[in-house]
Image 1 (tube, helix red, strand yellow):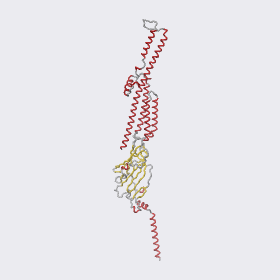
Image 2 (image 1 turned 120 degrees about the vertical axis):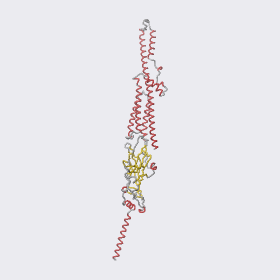
Image 3 (image 1 turned 120 degrees about the horizontal axis):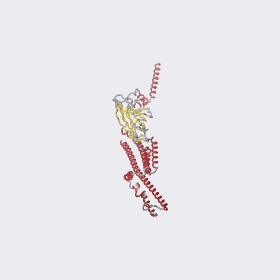
Image 4 (image 1 turned 135 degrees about the vertical axis):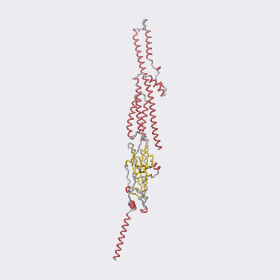
Length: 475
């Protein structure tokens, strides 16, 4: 009886312990069992290969999501990219049948080995979100994907601003592993990476042209390191700068050209051109904030503004010179013969001015000279005196007027004096007209030279910008 009771108690104890083991095993889910299985005895500080001679291949992929900023002054390129890297961890494999057919799972990033791939040009990660887990398959393939805001150094060339194209490199390499231990390659084909714009935010100042890639091996202190270089090619959209910078400047230059059609003797031309020059100076002060500032050199648009300012200054100087020529009659009444011959004959022929009558007065059609007027007046006076002579003195041969006709003689002398003054005024007026004609001819000559300089400059500028566009297209 006692023996039977003892056997019954033993059976109860065994059954209760079996139930406890079953309940404890049922509380462990397959995911938890898999997690414990993978990390049991795992060492994340060692490269995940069973044979140390095997090379770990890391597959990388980059997709440009947006170009946030291009800082020309500090030579910094800021972009938002989607970066992923995958590799095979030989220690993190399992049989899905043992764990309820689980083929993939997630593990915290800080629990597994991660390749030390860096971007050489990186200066700041910015506000990149932290992704705490990596994706892993039952074959040991690990995928570490995350968005990144990268700020990298870039050799920015702004000579052709705003029609410039920039190429910024993202150089991916290992910090300590050589090519004997680790290799870096692209996950997708090169052409697919080059033309991938499906997620690019195409609404900003910059347009994504392509993402070029090439693989190189760098050598340092006898060791070789794997390097995968991705070149992000971006192009600036120039419409904003053309509308707000180039076209207004061209309009001001057109107004300066129209200012030459004001008469040279008019004082309004010089005031108009000085006002235009001051307005252009204010315009440059306003747009200076829109121009990129780099210590490396001046962009072509900066040269464009400088030359436009220089042309406006030359235009003002030309107007001052013409006004000086026009006022020359007050300092030098008579026009030198060599100036008259050079300007009114040779330069008019050079300028193809067919109607030369408007530039030169013919002396045959001018007023009578002073000697002719005096001779005519003297003859009239002698004739008048002969008619009114009462007698003559043959010994002296002098003709003397009568006293009663002295009043008439005075009136004739006054008439002669007035005629003399009129002739002198007419001669002075002829000199003024000649200086004015010289000013007109020189004004036409300088205006045509100014037109040639302006159009030649704009033509050269257009050729330079168009060549830059062609070179960008071909590259």
